[in-house]
Image 1 (cartoon, rainbow, N blue to C red):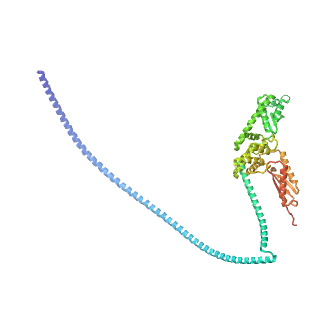
Image 2: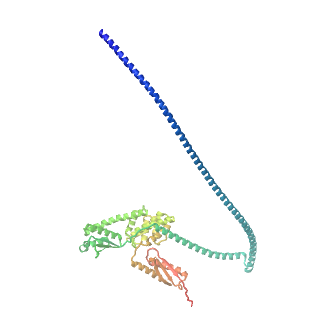
Image 3: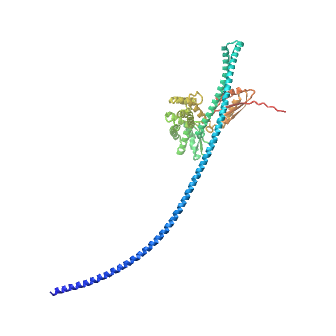
Length: 535
């Protein structure tokens, strides 16, 4: 019970203490709230005054900015107005200039029309005068025609009376005389036309040949009949000769080439006219020098080996040349024959390269003349193939080449080209003439062929001797390295008509008695001079 009373007393005391504390806190909070409210009111008054002050400042700044913007807008408006006035003035100025130009053009056109009108008026007057003149002339011609007709009738009557001939007989005489006069005129015209055609053809031919020469450029090295083989030392000469000359005799007998061993240091010369044999001898000798075993059995072995190797090289040469010229369907035997021309020369000119060049030149000329280019190149390529075997088969290279072309069924134009390129037969096509011209061009151009100085001088002397052998020749000169012979005749013994005959006779004699590359021009000159002195 006591504990219960103590608990209640404690509770009451706690309640009183709590009430007192709460009352104190509430009073303190009230006082704090009142103070905060007073502070808030004071702050509100301060903020309001500050806001009013800032508003006044903003209003004053806005007024200042508005005045500045108004001034700027006013300046911009004035500037824009000024530019607009300038543009309007410029447009007015350009339009005034255009109007002035148009006015000037209209004035000039008006003046031009006035002048044309004056010209037309003057021309109209001239036409009227000409028309009147033509009318007068026509009337005059009519009168003259009537007079001529009357005179013709009188003339006919008078002729019949004097000549005692009928009109038909007189007409026949007049027609005969007219025909004779016209015949002379026609002959003169034909001669002039023929000369014009010749001149034009000569000019065209020169142009074609010059174009062909410019479009084809080939290099040639003159071939010789002697081949030089270099030795490592002079002691090799004795080994090449061999005991009692057995080695050199074997090599010469198997190759058919003369081996010249002289005092020239470290050099052996191979001499022979057959380039194929000379090439076999060169290959054999170089192989013997490289191998070191030099005796007759080894020489025989190498000669046979090099002969077979050279056969393969000949075929390769022929195939390469045929491919270069575009003749890809040649018979294998013809390819081998053409390959042999690599080792054939004519006046120092390699015949295979000459054949290729003739084929190319013929193709160029054929294209200019509208002929078959492929056929012309083929004919030019094969034209000298007889030279490959002319030393083994009897006959000229023209006859041999023609026979082989027929044997291997070449085109008839090709066959005729081969047969006619030296003038043995008449050419039957334009291609044959083209190939003959290309052959002469390739052979005669400077540097293509070589000949000894003795043969050259002898040919020049023979040319002059042939020219001076004719009656009436005063002097003769071989010019342009034997390409032309110029003949001076005595004017009292040779007339102008005989000059042409003499040139023809000299040409025929040169063709029959001389061998020469290309063409030789024969020029005969007759000059008569009369000289006197005044004293």
